Amino acid sequence: MRWGSGLIARLNGKAGRVVVACAVLGLGVAAAAAAQDDGGAGVLKVRLGGDAHQTRIVVELDRSVQGRLLAKETTARSVVVALPQVGAPGGMQGQGAGLVKGWSVEEASGGARIKLDLVRAAVIKRRFLLAPGDGVSVYRYVIDLSEDGLDASDAAVPGAVAAASQTPRPQKVKAPLQPLVPSKKVVVIDAGHGGKDPGALGADNREKDLTLAAARALRDRLERSGRYRVVLTRDTDVFVPLERRVQIARRANADLFISLHADSQSDPSIRGATVYTLSEKGADRAARRAFDRDGFVDVALPGADESVNRILLDLTQRGTVNRSSTFAETLLHRIGDRTPLLQRSHRDAGYMVLLAPDVPAVLLEMGFVTNAEDERALADPDHRRDLMEGVSQAIDDYFAQESRFAMQ
Image 1 (cartoon, helix red, strand yellow):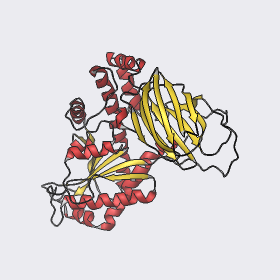
Image 2 (spheres, rainbow, N blue to C red):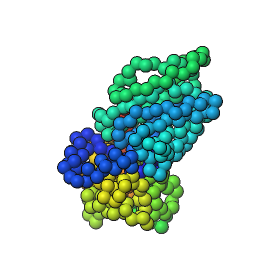
Image 3 (cartoon, rainbow, N blue to C red):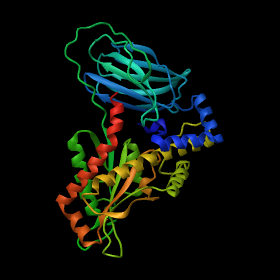
Image 4 (cartoon, rainbow, N blue to C red):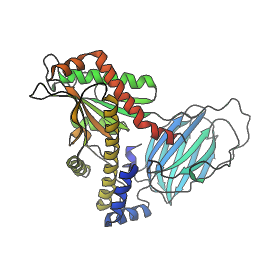
């Protein structure tokens, strides 16, 4: 999912289709299409999942492609696949998982080239391409590796628009194959304030302490599930600049960013939780920072010129905001019976921690520290664990559909 590859255009559902349809009516999409024809964009992201017996590599693309196997040198423990007419601006690389020690994507003559360095000898069980659909906005080129020398099946893969199976040298099967394990989603939890910044003050508690306790409770719940890799922007009472919090999320290749806060109000009778997602003004602010070389957003855009890049950034931002809003509604549904909500509980704002254009993000105000009942609840470990249980269930719901597609 990864930052050297540039932005990931995540356009989901009807909202995403409306964005694309509107863009087609303008000159901008023509420029973006021209950039694709030139191979300026192409590889968006690489994901790995599996175990020491079987490993799946998923290469997310912005176009259809027919991959070509260049090398399957099991003695050299490497696999090389060419993707004709696909760009890889700046190249990409990353650590492996399962049978893959490391991977890289680089531009080569006529397209991109994927190289997989293997931990030990393995065979390609199958390769195929999945088209966009059912909420997934990108093409996915899939490579399945196995340590066992099974004959690859030429049977059609459900949902695939193209398949290219490679028949390995027959070998004796040593043990039954285990099902592929999906790669863990990365969730970044941001405990608001900290250090010299205490945040809002209640009668007996400081916001920075309540948010840190909640962040730890949520981390523990997510890690117990075994389905996520969790990153905290802070795990102690330290000051972390807002820009740094965004950078932590992006460098961790976050799939979701949650910033935890406790609200304040001059009227002590006001109580209830609120969820914020990025406003239009905030999106404009993020876009300006993306084109500022000294800005903290620091994105790598694949277009040939700034006008194309602005179009790609706009499409990506809209997709990200849509995903953020989807999670926000799911979150409110899950916590609504665990804590009071404000009457207008889903709001938008330009908070800096929400500015990453390619990471779905929400800011959760867990309650009002200036309200005696909310403060008492937020300081109670049992209530805090129950509230974070609702947040974790919302995270499970949010990723459930995407996980099903990743396992196809």
